[in-house]
Image 1 (cartoon, rainbow, N blue to C red):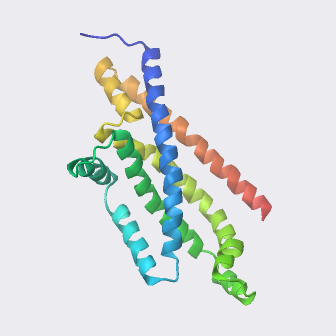
Image 2: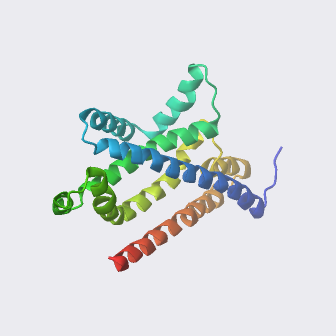
Image 3: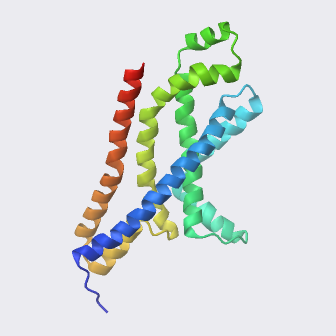
Length: 217
């Protein structure tokens, strides 16, 4: 039976899908950021074992497709007798993926702090944690703003991949609407516009933060 959809019906359903896209993006970014911080400190620790474990973690998640990681979380746990919802699998998979990339982005920012800053803090008899807290991390934070926010845009767009495991975010909702309405150009045009609306403010926010830190220097 053919169901007639008005333009507002399409927009209303896409807004519902956009809500799940935004929620998943926030969870993946903030939880991934928390895990990424742990991985970062392990990666730069003065302990070979911690460095090796952190490096292996980053290489595994950077070296394999997000799609495969989602399959392993969703179908792998099911094969192990643990039933998980598409929502949980999408959040877990995207969080692990995000944490690896953020850890590596932040490691590069920490290591870009001039060596002279480390040496100066050592001459002041600061301990390693104090060096990180008072000297290195504040400078690394300024450097990290642009790539971190840039990657957050990739996280938002990366949620589209979770449709493969049945998570009804923006892209999945758009696909279902396109099949139901036979108006793919309209539907996916609106989907593209929705992603732009979600991502563009992040770019503006990055510029405002960069300006704030530049003035504070």
